[in-house]
Amino acid sequence: MTNTAKGTVFYKEEAYQKINEYLLEQKPSKIFILVDTNTHELCLPAFLPKITTEIAIEIIEIEAGEPFKNLDTCMGVWQTMSDLEGDRKSLMINLGGGVVTDLGGFVASTFKRGITYINVPTTLLSMVDASVGGKTGVDLGNLKNQIGVISNAEMVIVDSDYLATLPSEEMRSGLAEILKHGLIADEAYWEKVGKLSELTLNDLDDIIRVSVAIKAKVVSEDPYENGLRKTLNYGHTLGHAIESYCLTHTQKKTLLHGEAVALGIILATYISKELKDFPTEKLDNITRRIVELYGKVEFSKEDIDAIIDLMKYDKKNEAGKINFVLLKDIGETEIDCQVPNNIIFDAFEFYQNA
Image (tube, rainbow, N blue to C red; front, side, top):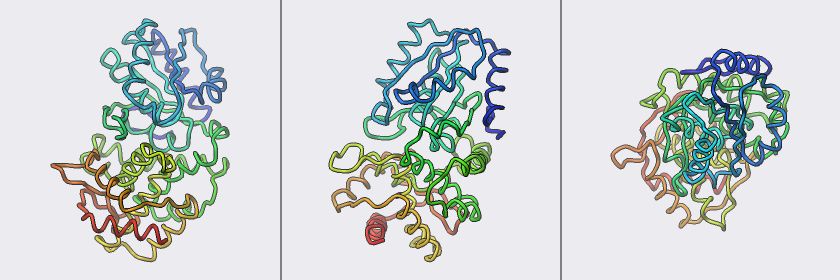
């Protein structure tokens, strides 16, 4: 059990006991379960038998994938909830990865000016990142997470059994956020997870709990991202821009969120060496491990120019200045750092030559 700013993260069988107790005590008027095309087939059949209730359950399905994380999809979900006579006592359960928990949380937080929702993350990435901390939202065009609110789930149910259905690239995508947690918070944790070439289901329960605890501690101290919570964006300033760029340029391989963040971590760590004297030996170690896990992507000068241009839309920016999170050492962060473009180009060159 991990406490967060509002609800609590429950694990495995205790989690289903808690959700059934909640349904018995709170008696929502209706339960909406939001799934995507993948979790409808792979996860819902395992989830539904765990729920003991006489309350009407309605299943709402959306298309799977980042391209559908937008207001058009929200409109469809809102309309379906309205057609099914959802009211302010309705409950939304988001069963899926980060797209489902981000979008479903936003839909719930705005339908009838806000209904209660519960997250049941089914990917490693969403278990350790998207489902905890209350950030909800959707993309605006190709710009990630531009529309949304901070609104915490009533509770989060983490059951690593869902990961048995997950492709290996999705597991690696989640590992990137775990690596980030180690780099910003705990060198011993980084050393442990940085040595994993592949995550096995046996590794996962303890690792997920540690990563959730790291994020939950940060979020509880700074729920609205005024300071400390910005550290969770390590690797994301360039990572989000790279992810957005690859989504809209068909000549580029579309990157999963974690793949883009992993690349962003290398770039941010190089920049940290240049501007904050981050140790070179540790930079080389981090780079080697990430390249071994994720491979490399080639970028031209034109690509890099476009990626830098996309960073001006980053949510951490203030007064037109692009703000980076940098490291002085593993576990020692500095927020709101401005970085000259020439250093960003140097970082890409370092990455290309790694």
